[in-house]
Image (cartoon, rainbow, N blue to C red; front, side, top):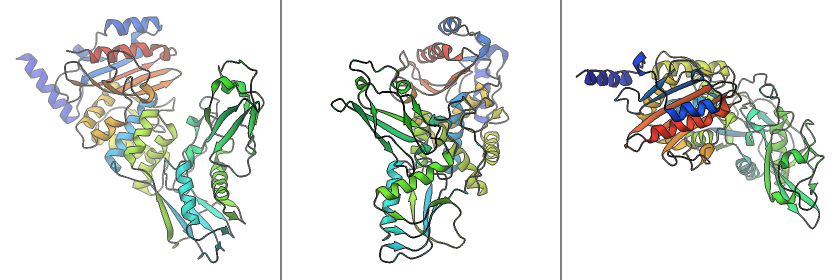
Length: 473
């Protein structure tokens, strides 16, 4: 009878979003997880865990320091992406309208072209090519004016790409942009040509006014692939020049490397002009920032893939800048301008309504932050809500599958193929959260977060918790 009363209390608590963890629900941790923590030299007090049925019908199977605020790293992306699916809908798309302030005549436009960014997180090379092709299809060969980039949809905040970890060329440090092109990164492809003694280098997108070397010398015959990026001795600090002072090992075969170049605010202008000229277009003016004149009507508009597809890219591969684009879009759709302050307010209000009064410090919404905080209890409650929501299929399908794809493709163990989990890693954070299908047929919500200087070494402890959850019979 007592068990029945407790079970009923937990069921109602989950339905009402009032998750309070009694002391008797705290631990003990599974032996395999404890042993893995010990090997990693991480104390149990650095771990927060909650394992509870997705439908919330029973008390938690495991709760350990679940009400302690922790930095979740990229697991924070679950909050942003679920909020976006809930508030905007899975079919939401971003439009990038293109305006002409004069009518083309005889293949020439004597005026300006305006491209207005509205936050599209996936305006990649292929879609930029299509946009420029559509511009050519307006009957334009020569633009006798400027191409004006309107990025005013997002309130630009000062951004130091080196501030987080001193590596500004890494694409995960790119700032959001209302007109984000190819994630503000250039993809460099290396193809060995042994007969010529060089690796040929190609670049996407093409960039105007940037010196890009076409080849790099090959390493000595027989050289192992190894750390080929370091061997290139690449220089990216000059905004108009990429340099390679090293060599490329032929043993690597074809490889690709994406980097964010210096002067990120100038990247869009170089990419737009480079693509326009590659398609045979001519430009007598320049590409510059500005705003669309009032009253001008679009000549055409390029639409993005649906939000559900963007969410899948974000969670499968933990794309930081795409997450921030979605985060700022929440504010843009509600208030007309996307700013971090407004986006945090939108997310905080949604969190209170959907999850209840619990800790949430979203910062930039992507988890690439030292300040972000939530509790395992709050995130588990959100995942239970998501399980019962109409957008559950889209959120679930976006999560990496253990041992199959995304950031968990190399994962092994009892849960391979049976767990959909978002991962999170910083130098002092290791985390996983999502859904585990147990051997019993039950579906569990699992949230596990380690905050400790040795956190990355504690990943096996989190994997042991996933396996323990999957083994439930």
